Image 1 (cartoon, rainbow, N blue to C red):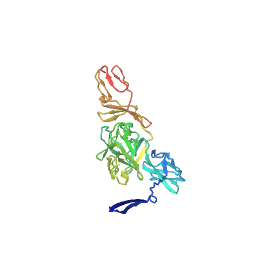
Image 2: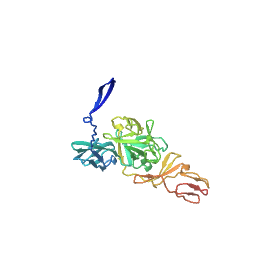
Image 3: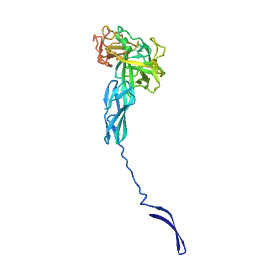
Length: 350
């Protein structure tokens, strides 16, 4: 027992008063340490294709009596009792594991992005059954519209206009390129959807935000939303059932004209295509499977690149890829020579 006192001297007498005390035996300080069990997952974010599987594993300390696995949205992904995640439709969800430890559940969570496999696709409106189609014009901000499927008897350069190269760039976002012109992509401009130059690199840092699209399954169809415009989707007018109507971005409505079917192309055309920027068209001879003739003029001793000639070549391959480099040859050499990268040098008139 501690006492704190004050004394006042009055002659030979001291008067004391106790004004505070502390009982150390009763009021001892203490520290309580509580151990909280931990649950650990093998992965906390996964990206899987529709139809593919991914096995998650869980561990805990102390060891759990058992684990329960749950999917927040089984229309996007399911999970088995052993942690196998199956991609169902494109979109985002998360999987939770519950570990039962000493009579209590403890949890951990994994974000799941189910994606459309990279490839070449037809995109059709669910209301009109018309195909998303690029304009013949290859200039920037060319219109994109819906149109009836082109007959297979058309030149392959025409068929390419209804084919779209879809590439996943992460976190439910995609680049959607016109296969008709590989450096062009779907692009939102003031509510209108068009095709414009977006370079040839597919990642979120190098692509304009206006060309990044969220594709998610939403009851009988896919919604295609421009990044940062989550409530606005690619669509056509609800009464637009015939060919030629423009595609645009507007407020989402749970209706067929705001939803799309995405179907992989089974037989992708291949060949060399020559882009003529003077006419903004693709030149291709389906009979010879080679570029059509484009005429340009060059003086003896003068050299010009593809850019200076306002042309560009692209090779389309059956493995669903396109490349933008080719080797050039000239004939006859007495008139002009060509470097392997397409620089033409005039030699003699001819």
